[in-house]
Length: 486
Image (cartoon, rainbow, N blue to C red; front, side):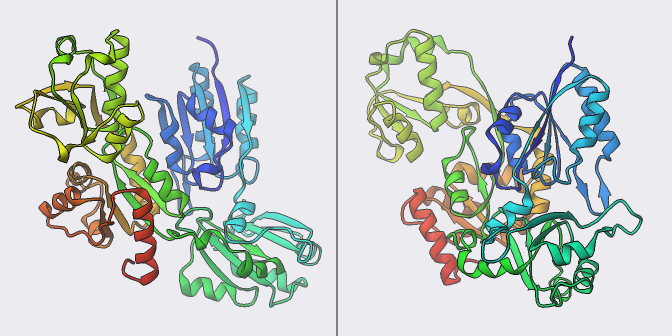
């Protein structure tokens, strides 16, 4: 077995879409991913099945893995012949210790690529409506670490040069040393009324800002109990924020949504919610294994008068089997039905006419098509199993960390099945505290999910008029603006 390959990848500042194409390609081919706290865990969903996921995050008060242990792991996994991705928040070359990791690999003759990322010092201000350079406010910009390796952690900088020679300064993780930073900048020539803004969790829907001046910001931070991860931006350019703010004006900004899932495909609803400014956690994460073809049922496919597809995935999987088995689609003479609007749409996209299950006529023999989780619900009818589906246990500790960092305020249930799975895998297992449901706005996309929620003694706070993405976005935005929700 030969030596593997290591990719030292910048994950960007948080928003999933801000990772580079090359970085995403590295994740998709990885055998092992060693990821940091500030790398959005949602990026791990692009990893191939069986990829080993190792958390190497650092918190202000403790290290999960120290740097020397991370270096050793990278070397060990590469020497096992594996493709290893070191996934680091922001850009690996900006206070990301990529030099130390690359040096450890070079010492062992291990091949590596360094993949740049979007750094938080520029991205977080932009998402707060502040470009870091502007011809009228400042043509120089510096990024500075707000703590160093000294015993007290206070940066030993050329304060006079920064105070008099740099228009805009971005301090990384500077909250604990903020009084020290402000005092030194003022002492060396910066005006006490120089604008300052702190941007916490920049580019996430949970982004939070706090504005002040060099003279007032430390006191405000203490009063608000503002914490890292945050970028501190100092300079007159902060004043353009009132006019250029854009991200925080998105209709769902501030919504931290827990979306109950029953499918394994990428969620178009999650993407739409994210596009409109929300933070979205999809739970649970499912993995599937395609079932072997049931040749007995396929031989009788022309005898059925009705076929019900329980999910969009079941549509895709079933017709793939037909093709592989060489069965002509024209052998199907049944009326087709979908268990949801998405299932009907999946059939329509294949050029097939279909109706919702509620419109089904009681004529002809019925075949149910779906995954193994539904098999016992249709004992009186023939059931074609397309796949087995189970919770991806490897993602459970990742969900734990996601819930620790986020403050969920909205839970969306797209279907009755999503309610039942959410309660079983989240609430009853103890992974998600019941307080999450009690303290969140509960949104049901239709009567089935509303009734299922009532079975667990919860009442929906919002039910859109139509179970589509546009109606949901509009209802959530209107409720937010009117103060009905949150």
